[in-house]
Image 1 (cartoon, rainbow, N blue to C red):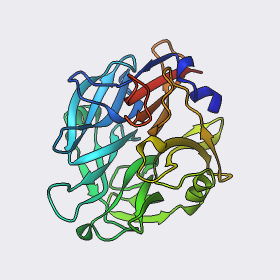
Image 2 (tube, one colour):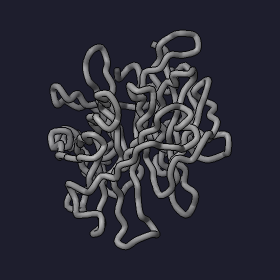
Image 3 (tube, helix red, strand yellow):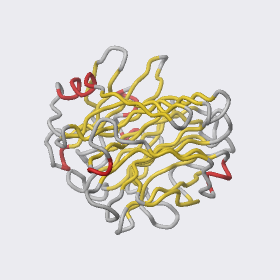
Image 4 (cartoon, rainbow, N blue to C red):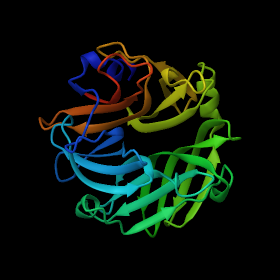
Length: 304
């Protein structure tokens, strides 16, 4: 996997500073295949007064048409197709500028169909209470979700949703957690210190935040962001982690200009218009640690 996704210069196609058809930045983009053809992506855009979560469509993975704004005061979304023909979006909601102290928390949105998603019409919503930090009214942060699995029996009101997220441990550093939403109303969560320990052993002294997960040759594989130095935006790196063995390794990412800082990683399997299988990777390149012309959202994919 390291050889497959580590070298942007060997990608089938790529795009730095990715933006949608409205000119909005596509930060923390998560891409999945669209059952109706092409691709779907959810991401956030900084509006100046706060973040908005948006959805866009693409036929080629590098050009994207804005279709809808899904939420305001929300960021770092992820998306998964659900067995009922709908879609699940999980995001980091916030009350910045609306309440004090500020807080972030996990919000779940289910859309019954593609039309519902593209018209921003969810049929179910759940705001998760804080479980590993102080209650929302007292501030604190839980967020940056990824979806491990969605099981419906037979619908979202009778479901089990398994996600990963981060929590602001002891109000000092972001650390890893996992949560389960049952029947879209009952939430429970637990810390994942084994992941933290594996990345700390590789030099992460700052935050350990966003992540994504997929199956690779029959094995579950995670991709994580970790910060080598706290409060240093040039110190973000990405790591591969195998939950089965609790082993981690740093992923060396080679861009065209030599950027060195990478955050908010995601990866997905997709089918290209040619019918070939590909893996699509997205990374956010902070200005600090970026090469000229490379800051912002990076998307690249490689045929397999």
